[in-house]
Amino acid sequence: MNRVSLVGRLTANPELRYTSGQQPYTRFTIAIDRTYKNVQGEKETDFIGIIAWRKQAENICNYLDKGSLVSVGGRIQTGTYTDKEGNKKYSFDVVADNVQFLETRAQAETRRKSERVNAQPNNNVERSPYDYQDNNNQGVTIEKDENIYMDMGDLVDIDVTTDEID
Image (cartoon, rainbow, N blue to C red):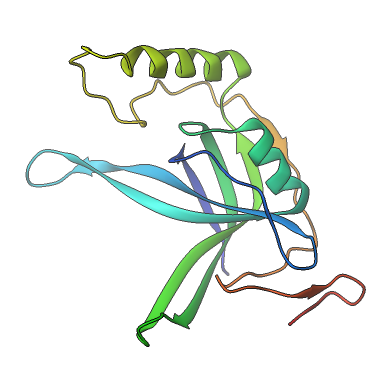
């Protein structure tokens, strides 16, 4: 079984893109703090790449931004490619089939105001985009899109009349 569930914060504003067959998708990264500290007493953070397709991608790009708290359910997708120097590279992403927004609009607006205040000059408090209060797991669910196409990081041609990927 290939199933993964993650909770983390977006590291950047998501951008909506389209395949050559005009299918919308987005790639974004979420930051997830580990539950333990390293030998220096510091928490470490993992950064996981996520791919979402169609209406789910559109909703993510319309309603989420850097720092948004989300729950992602999906599957792990691996791939290989050759870079410009001829080196073989490996990719690892989560293809989302369910994304839940874990902040209410009010919580998101409070977070944005806090970010603006902390971005002011002469503020000596150093914060990362992950220093936010957790919420009560309230959110909006984006339903699973039953017909998800894979994207291994290369350009993908999709014939929407036959559901074939070139």
